[in-house]
Amino acid sequence: MSKPALGRGLSALLGGGAAATRPASAPASAPAVPAPKPAAPVVPAAPAAVPAVAVVPSAPASVPVPPVGDVVQKVAVTRVRPCAFQPRKDFAEDAIAELADSIKVQGIISPLIVRVRGDGFELIAGERRWRAAQKAGLTEVPIIVREADDRAVLELALIENLQRENLNPIEEALGYAQLIEQFQLTQETAAVKVGKSRTVVANALRLLKLAPELQGYLRHGQLSVGHAKVILGLTGAPEQRLAAERVLKDGLNVRQTEELVTRLQQSSTQAPTKAASGGKPAAPRDVHVASLENKLQERFGTKVAVRYRKGKGAVEIRFFNDDDLDRILQIAGVKVD
Image 1 (tube, rainbow, N blue to C red):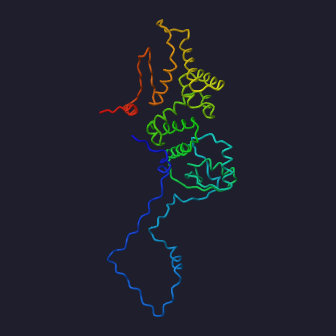
Image 2 (tube, rainbow, N blue to C red; image 1 turned 135 degrees about the vertical axis):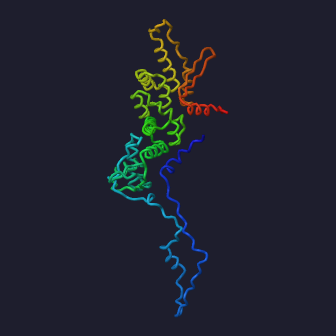
Image 3 (cartoon, helix red, strand yellow; image 1 turned 90 degrees about the horizontal axis):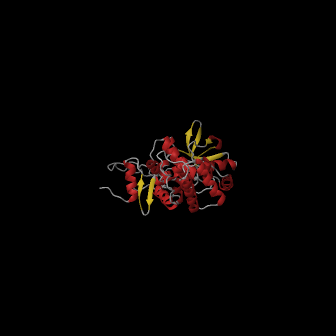
């Protein structure tokens, strides 16, 4: 099933102007009323430009008139407040300052999109412009008022930021999580609404399993998403923190991080404790097998287990309902008759 392009999100959710209706044509049978003949001599006609100017105010009824919702209004900047559903939490001050300098010269070119809340307005899209307008000293800002419920507002806020790639990985993941949890959506439905694949959404949500310190590293760009996905192979927060500290201290790339994670996994499985049955500790995992397992999990957007020994083994792909199985089969290119 094809996914909607991300670009259609804002226009489809915001809605557009209503199509202009054509005026009803006069009945065909209505006879033309003859004009009365003038009693006095006819005054010479004015230049051709004069009649053209005279008819401008009474334009033909077929000219489309923009609906009220598309009218740009100016309101006091103090009457506009941020949106509670804004997924973006980090606003770079230097970027806001640059935008404020531009606004001082050019003004706000693109109006803010808002909805009515009490005696003021709540932002749907354009918080950066609103913040920069205040920094630039503007007392009024241009707005377009829309009707939108909470779900539409959250979708719009996500789409606007994703289109501009303004969200850091954790903000993006939290936005998906909020959309799914607050409105009881599946990952598939949430992905369709924001124009992403389910795999992208699933991989983003996995980042929320990282220890809080590591989420902070991702927010500020100290760790890449590639590093984070590898570190997620460690389930314990202490091990994750240890791996992240080594990555930052030694400047490890993703491949080196894979080797580090494998060593940490080996050390945890080689603990001196044994099973109650007297069995041996689990054999350490091969780094290449662990890497392959991570790649398969990213590809299928679900948990994948790879068992490998001397050229033989098995791949186990988890699914949780029939729709999930259909999705996995489609990714694998398997058609069910």
